Amino acid sequence: MRHRADRPSGLRRLAALGADESAAEDERLRRSTLVLSTGLVCALTPFWIVTYLLLGLPVAALIPLVYLVVSAGSLAWFARTRRFVPFRAIQLTMMLVLPFALQWSLGGFAASGAVCLWALSAALGALMFMGPREAIPWFVAYLVLLGISAVLDPRLDAADIPEGVRIAFFAGDLAGPSLVAYLLLQYFVRGRDREHARSERLLLNVLPAPVAARLKRRDGIIADRHAEATVLFADIVDFTPLSVALPPEDVVRLLDDVFSAFDRLADEHGLEKIKTIGDAYMVAGGVPVPRDDDCEAVADMALAMQRECERRGPGPDGLRFRIGMDTGPVVAGVIGRRKFIYDLWGDTVNTASRMESHGLPGAIQVSPRVHERLRGRYRFRSRGTIEVKGKGPMPTWLLLGRAPIAGSDVSRG
Image 1 (cartoon, rainbow, N blue to C red):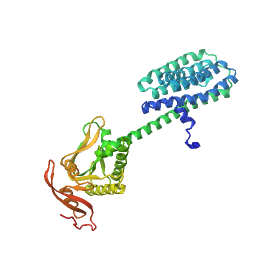
Image 2: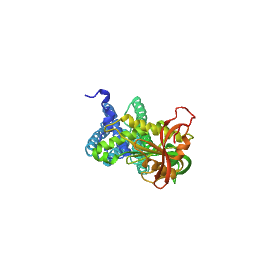
Image 3: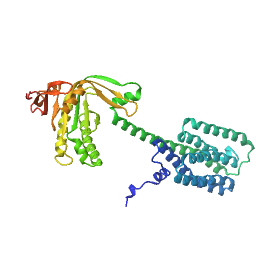
Image 4: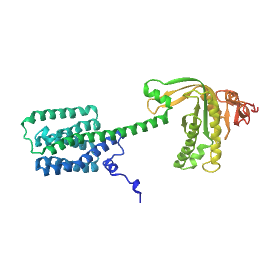
């Protein structure tokens, strides 16, 4: 059995009535808000029915009774059919017309306590549930009915309602619509805030925060030239036969687990994950915000990635990576209009990719520029000169770890 705290509240169950999971978030919010408002007004309606009956006003009592019966029926119909547009039209029409009908039956503004104020909920509801342009006719209709009420008011016979009750009606007719409007707006605004926060998180999962901020401020091409950045590529050794041997779910689960661990390492070292390409992982330091220690931060992450793979050990979760690094100038920017991506280009990117593809399983191979930048603070082993595709002969080194004594040159070869 679920604990009481795990059970959905009555409001949540009501809001979920007629929910359509295939609809967009805004549409689901509109549906749940209208359902909640209808339920709230229905909960208040019996009070008015009983009050008018006690005052000997059966016609006035009949009007809220009609609203209660029709609303309950339309809620049940909406829960079964999920047809929101007819349900919305029924509710807005009753919210607009019935308060004026009630006011006319009671004898005008003063006698009814200006009950027509409840009709303003129809215009507000149209604004929330339909949009600004579609709400204009509803507000115009409200003003027209208000004008008709002003013309009819002197000709109506006021119901015999005690002064104290009439004042209470007037206070209730001010407080009721105000309460409904406040609760609706608060619920709607909170839902919009949640959606905005969710969208913001999704955007920051795609783009670096400074780039996302620039993209929201203006349209157009976003591109920057960075004089110094460090790029790392990592690729799983023998991934193709591994992916063939495992079920698809296990392949995706394994990649998600490993790359999520790399994402945490990138956050810890203040680096920017650029993208994953199949079983390859790309991260960079010094972009989009320059930093003096970008090469050191990327080297530390490369060593941490090695430790993460060693920690997993042998077995189905045990993986070996080839890792390559280079440092130098890059061009960074956002490409695409749909499913856009923040990416890097330039010789530094190409060289880092070659350091990975021409590297050794389980090793971190770096370019001469990385070796020159980090020598004295990190330990290296020379691999000698190798033939690099598109680059020709190039001396390379394997990064082994941090130097035990800061400032001493312990690189070999």
